[in-house]
Image 1 (cartoon, one colour):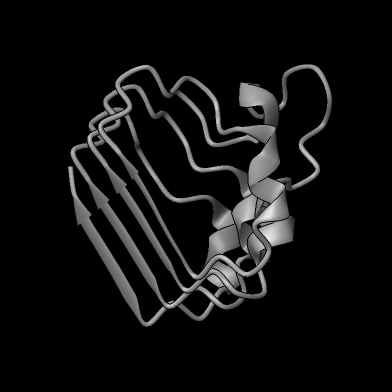
Image 2 (cartoon, one colour; image 1 turned 180 degrees about the vertical axis):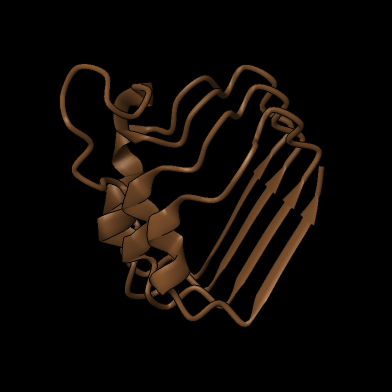
Length: 107
């Protein structure tokens, strides 16, 4: 997996998403574009998933360098678990507005 599939936006009732051992995945932005490159990131697919997604697990993504600003739409998110993502340096500023009771990070 290099990019998130465009069809993920149709999973509007999705409550838990696990992205595991995708060694080629660099970004969770739409169409795999780095934030600020080409088209402006409009928050997809995160805008579509925001009302129901409660748990997001990201494991074994060695090339993942950032989390997209569009994750601010994950208003139902209660748990974010990140492990084995050594290129990830920080959470986006926009995520500070979310009321996340549980964030777990293990480089």
